[in-house]
Image 1 (cartoon, one colour):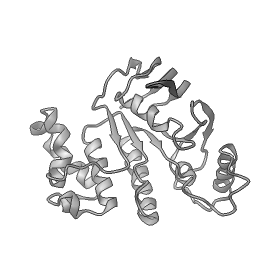
Image 2 (cartoon, one colour):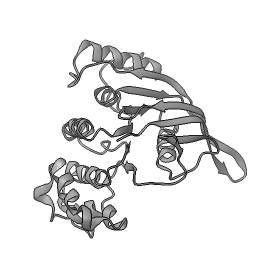
Image 3 (cartoon, one colour):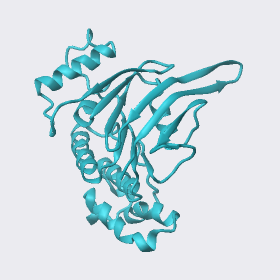
Image 4 (spheres, rainbow, N blue to C red):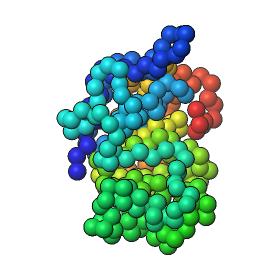
Length: 259
């Protein structure tokens, strides 16, 4: 499986009636290698989710281009799975049918029905296949969303703050789940997060974006072996570096996980 993303000179504007356009992204250049785990971090409203939606093909750029494995991204495609902060499961379908939905929509369910159970098992939800979304905990529902995206075997998995609504302990468990799934499936993963520790814990590289109009301010490699210890001095040093880039270094005395 491949999944190299190239972003070349991308600009995105949002028009406003009677006012100047909002420039969300201004000249974004970035290459993401196949199989990399990348986190996008920066101030709220700086354009992180906008960039993710452009990669997904949900919106188009006003200038520049985005490519996956050399082909320009022009529209949504099953090879780019997207997981939102809220699970977005269909409440009228049980867990099995939620995961199977994409295969049925693509008319591939009959020959690939075994994939549904495979990915339910991968996220640890096989025993709950007949349950409905309202019967699941927040962490279980988010794992179901991951299974629904993964069943289509995407080259790239796009994660828009998928753990932001979870409690701290569930969030840390889900971070470990993401790493396990990424290592097993070898997808390219791109995550938007406001949590500096989460970005360090998960990522191969952290992309720090400026306030709007967003540009890439820093591209920081994370050269820590996995599994990563959050109390490791190198981990803490990297956190301080990122907080400094985000202009929080002088005001944060205790770890602040939700910037």
